[in-house]
Length: 197
Image (tube, rainbow, N blue to C red; front, top):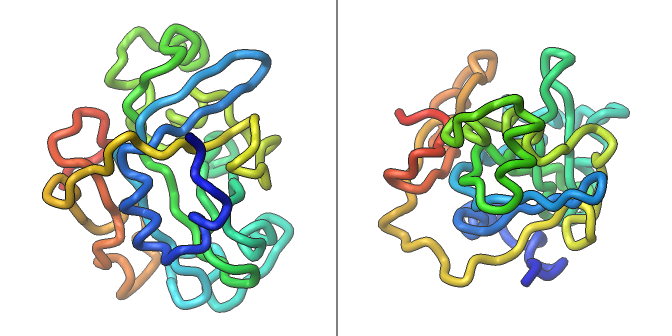
């Protein structure tokens, strides 16, 4: 069952933990793919030096972050890799959660073809990899996460608290004192987590 729209209006850290174990799915070009979310990172808008919205920055790219929670914020890094973020919170509160890694479940053959990979462990163990595997691009930026193109389904059982680990975020060397914030959440001992501290 998909998360209800109001789920995305909860606190961003609460949502981040609840997303672990949930199923991220895409239906692109009539192909269904999906996996279990095993790693996420929190970005806290205008106060977070690692956030695209730090200091209230609002550009054509970041405008979607200022919308009501429950939509996809997909952007390119290095002009090559798409990254998927879940926009959270009320309108004008540009918080987001980066989906960093999935455990592939549905449409694994499709994912392998898209990624040109024969190694399951390498399919979705990183934010760029999982977008490529799911067929997600900037075309899906702003998509409703309760819709039928890209969506998230609640897990049958929440991940137990003792199985949720925290660590600093990855690749934010520019973020000064925010480099060390333990705002990355991942499932303990899961082989699809992108980076073990």
